[in-house]
Each structure stands twice: as C-alpha cells, then as structure tokens.
Length: 343
Image (cartoon, one colour):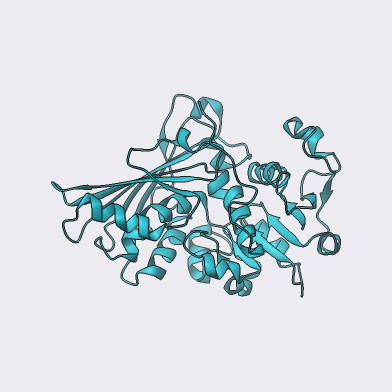
C-alpha cells in the first residue's frame, strides 16, 4: 500500500506515521500538511530520525490521488470535509480521524459542531469505524469515519449492556478524564502549562461534540436508548483516558452473568482486555488496547464500568490503522503489536 497522511504534523498524524513505518503492508508513506511543509519530517520531529524520512508536502489534490492508495485525514473537523470535498470521482480509500463524517443528521452536526459542513451529502457513504462493534461493515467499506477518543472508551465500555437491554435506558452517566494531548497542538489557555499543571478541570458541560456521536451509536444498537449525561475532564498528564460509566440495572445480576455478557460481546476481539481488577491508564499507555472492568452494586442496583485507553492510539491513530487492516481483510492486529509502556 502507498499511504498518504494528511495532517502529518499533528499529534495523531505523528502517531500514524510512527506506527505505519513498522506496518508490513505499507510500501510507501507520503506526508501532507496545509500549514507546514517543505521540510523533512524527521528534521521537524527528531524522534522520527533514522526511522522515518520524507518531505512534508503541500496539499495538492491531483498529486495526492496519483501518489496514494489510501489516505488518513488527521486534520481538525471542518478541515477534513473541505479537503475530502475536493476528491472528485475517485475510488481511493479514506479514513477520516476528524468528526466531520460521524454524525448522520446535518442539523445535529451543525448544532454540536457550530459550523456548516462542506459536503454533508457524502456522510452517508462513510462507515462508523468502531472496530470491535462494526467489523463487518468496515470490511465492506472504502470510507471510514474513525471514532473520537471519548466515544471509543465510552462505547466499548457500555455497549454490551445497552445491546443486552440490561440497563435502564437514558440512565447512563459518564465521567471521563483525558490527558492534555486530546486537545491537540493548538495553543490556548486550556492547554497552557500554568492552567494544566497541578490542576483538574471539567469542561464543555452538556456541550461536548462527542455527546451526539455516543448517543447515535448506542441508539443504533438499542432503539430505546436516546440520551446520556457526559462530563469530560482534563487532567495534568500527556495522554490517556479513564472513563467511569454508571447505569441503573433493570434487574439484579450476578457478577458471573455480568462478566459473561462482556465475554460474549468481545470474544475474539484482540484489543479489548476484560479485567477482574480496576485498570489504570498506565496499563494501556502507548498501546491500542482498551481495558474494561465492570461491577454490579447490589445495594444501589447500579453497574459501574471502568474503561481505559490511550487517546492518541486506540482513541485515534491506532484504531485508524486497525480499521485499515479490516478494510484490507488482514488480521486487525497487524502492525499494532505494541506492548504498553510501563512504568
């Protein structure tokens, strides 16, 4: 495969490049940017020296179509749709890491993303790339909307219970905490060292753009599930997401039955690890794993799920490569055998 990475200089783009360099099915990589180009990628990012080289090129739609078989768009929402709209009448495969092609209703997209969409008519052609739960559709698609980082940790954590109709619909409460890299490379007061160091903050209460993405997928597997309560937080670490999910059970359930529901859902899923102890972000740091722990509280009749991922890998670049593998119909773990970093 000849692979093009658009948005190569962002955090997700750099993670894509680092991992694709070791992928056995990748013959050639090309790097593109709309803002920073002309320099060798390893000169701008010395951690890639002796592993990856190649000039960062300016976006040129004609050249990109000729040079690549598959494109990763590691660009912000709004940018992806504008660029993809320029790709006319082509069969090139696309995996978009932005939120531009996840939401299927144009009014919902406009409400939550606060902007117009450059080519919403193409959204219906994109398959939602939650790898473990939408595998067959991904394998048949050439256009993938890669899930967001928070939705990945939430959906993998709670979907088995929603699908089994074991929890009260619309009782789901989500408390998610993310490392600062989730905010991207852009400079802002949010990512300023003085505001992040020794500080824990909630943000975008009731307004986070990942809310409709989570609701849309959960509704697709249980038509009675419509709403969630979601509060994201920023914590003073570079990467990782720990999501705590609370839901009211429809009936009493044994620990054995609860575990069986998860085992049945994720049987054969290489990157989901079901835990009998509470996981932490260090358990998945630098890997494409999602670790999940679920427990039932007989006293309150609530189920609590802990889900952890690396937001830049399973929450972005790693899952994108996993989706590429599914599209190529090769083992989904190909090129992703990264043991988590510890300590």
